[in-house]
Structure formats: structure tokens, C-alpha cells
Length: 255
Picture 1 (tube, rainbow, N blue to C red):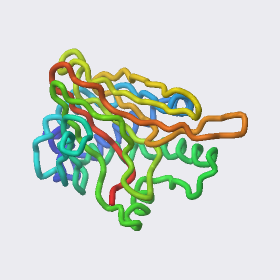
Picture 2: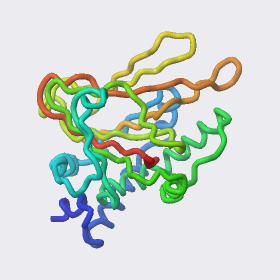
Picture 3: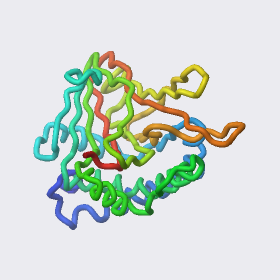
């Protein structure tokens, strides 16, 4: 089936191009000016209905297909929370690769604007291939896109996904399960720590197929003396019932 080939590492070349182009058109169709403004203001932006229900189901159903992944992490063994996740191995499944390639350019434009505002060195190339090549040259060669699975009582502690020297400042998470049908609870949560102020918590309303783009570590905030960094962390609240699957699309690779 095309759907199965589209998420398989061994997909025939004839199965993926049309689906990849449709997905990239979907990404390009969002109002990236408005999304950039939302990211500037609060550190996250919603991309509704990025994936279809069938695409979500295909990815979630592939969680136990061992050959797709390079490692499995049980969160409670490391103090990360409860639940587990798996990092995909290279080559990435075509759907995951298409998401990574399609989301990178508009996010890179926002990332470059943030970098300039904060006066940081370096810069972000226009293409994912060029950025990943930079990571690999620095020894960050392990892919970071991942599938997460939570059951009743599981949660993800507040954290930042930093894997080495080169960090792309934005990432995305796509909810593959339907709240109220597949699970209860399990909200995506971000906390924002501003200098000399109390932390602020934000709950992102996600439905199946929705993606949230958000800051990995910090976003710029204009102050009286120019821009400063507002630190963010993200996590998932405890599930009250059911099973929740999420696809995480991170653009920098790991050491």
C-alpha cells in the first residue's frame, strides 16, 4: 500500500514523490507571517491539520516496528518522566524526511531573524541538507526525529532537546492520537521563564494531526535595552486514560 510505503524506510521511489509534494504544499500554504508573529510573542505556533488521520494512524501503528529505530528510551529509567520514545535511524522514513525537509526552510527564516535579534554568531542555511551537513561535520551524526508513546499515568518532565554544539532553535511536535477518543489528559505544556519575573505556563490545544512549532531553548524578547532571551521548556502532563502517540521533528542531529 502507498500509505505503508510512505512511512517505510524501504519505500519505492515511485511511492513517495507525489505524497512529498502534497505535504510540502500543505506546509507552504500556512500563513508563515502570522506563525512567525506567534512564535515571537509566545514561543509557539499552531499548524492545524498538518497530517491526515490516516497518516497519523500509520505512524502510530509503526511504533513497534523495531528496524525503523536506532534506540528506545524508557523515560523513568533516566528521570525524564514516565512513558517511552524511539529515535528513528537513518535513512528516515519518507514521511518523516519530507516533514523535516518541508518545515525547515520557513522555520530557518524565523531562526535567522531570532539569531540576528540576539546578536548570535553563525547563521542558518536555507536547506536542511546544508544544516545537517554542518551537524555531521561537528560529530553530530545521529538522527533525532522520534516517536513518543504514553499510557495511563505517563508524563514527560519539562525539558529542552539539546544534543550538541549545533542547535536549531525551533522544533515541531505532531499529535498522532485524538484527545477524548484515544486518551484523556496528556496536554502539551510549555513554561516560559522571564528575567526577574515568575514563570508562565502555557497549554497548547492540539487535535489529531495538528503540529506545534516551538522554541527549543529560548526566544528573543524586546526590552528597554534591546533584545534578551526568554527561556522555555516543554513537556506533557500526565495521561488520565488511554494511549497517546506523538511525532517529534527536531532538525539538529545528536552526537
